[in-house]
Every structure is written in C-alpha cells, then in structure tokens.
Image 1 (cartoon, rainbow, N blue to C red):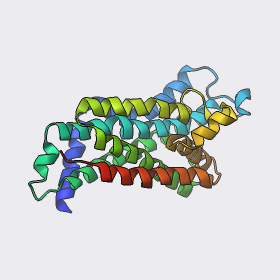
Image 2: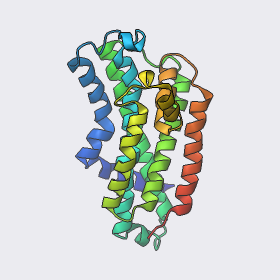
Image 3: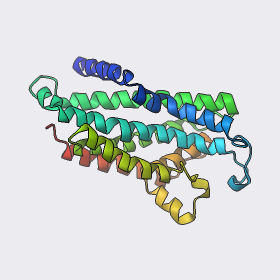
Image 4: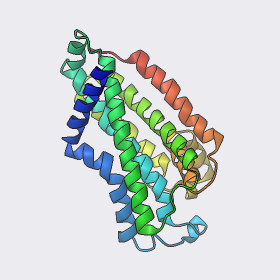
Length: 247
C-alpha cells in the first residue's frame, strides 16, 4: 500500500507540473461555465426553445462531463503511451513495484482532479448564476462515479493500444470530439432530434449528461442511462485489462 501511495503522490506532482493538463482538467469546466454565463447574452435567462429552462442550467452537466472526457480521453492515454514508449513500464516489471500500481496511481490522480474540477464548476454556477446545488446528491454522486468509470475505462483501452505519446494523443482526440458531440456540447441534448438523442443515450457521455442533469435538478436518473455507463465501465474496462501490454 505504501508503494502505491508513494507512486500516487509522485504522479500527482507530475500532473501538477503540466500546466495544460492542469488547466483543462481542473479549471476549464468552471471557466467555461462562467464565460458562457457572462459573455453570451441571455444565457442565464429562460429560453423558449428549452421550454423555459436556462442555457446555463443545461450546460452545467455538459461542462462536468466535458471535464471528465478531457481527463479520461485526452490526458490519460498519452501518459500511458509515453511510459510504454520509453520503457518505463518494462523497467518497473523488474522491480517490486508492479506496473499495475502505476495504473492505479494514475486512476486515483485523475479521479481526484475530476472531483475537484466538478466541485469548482458546481460552486461557480451556484454562486454566479443562482443554480441550485444538486437536489439529489446521492444520485448525483452515483451518476458522476459511473460517468468517471466509463470514461476512464475507454481511456485505459486507448492507453492499452497506444505505443507512443503521439498515438495516445491521436486516438484519444479521435474519440474525444465525437463523444463531445453526443454529450451535447454543440447541440444540447434537449433540442436534439429524437433519433440523435437515442444514439446519444447509447454513448457513455450522453448518458452521463442526462443522469447528472436529472440528479442535479431533483429527478431520479433513468435506469437505462445508469446501465449504459455501467456496461461501458465493466466491458470496456475488462477489454482494456486483457489487451494491456507493458512493453
């Protein structure tokens, strides 16, 4: 346990030294919501095309999921690709510190950053735009953890396939942007056509946005949305473990 904790502290320090990862993983969701609310006229006012809801209410869950996707799909895979490219994983196999501890440390660091980013973003919209705190906090936590598990599982699978830093970045970005589309970054899910929203519901980010939105505003998340995230977390995570190579 002490070896894993030491690795986690080391990986955390390395993460803090990367200003780009730190900004987009930790700060960007809150900054994005503040920028949208203050810079776009009417963003914090009821909108007819949203049945009276405000755009800032709609984009709150989207920003949280965007932060998770950035950590899981953009930050995590290149790190694993780098460690494989430079033989760090291979060398660790010759020491008492098994490479699996390194993966555990990475997941702990990224989850900790995700939790802090989510807390900052929620606090930002609550203070600045009078958005309520999550009204179903237990379901909010469950939805968030399932969302993180599903996204990080995909990130681990990409990391399992990436032989270099560059390939980790390329594969991660190739998955990242389509995922953001189905999460509603460009077209909010509430105004998507029915067919497109059905497809979105079958993606981990689309289900994550819906489940987090429901729990944030007092509703119980749909079982299907929770199940989709759980299936991605278990199935993709299992495949990632099976396909993972240390060299």
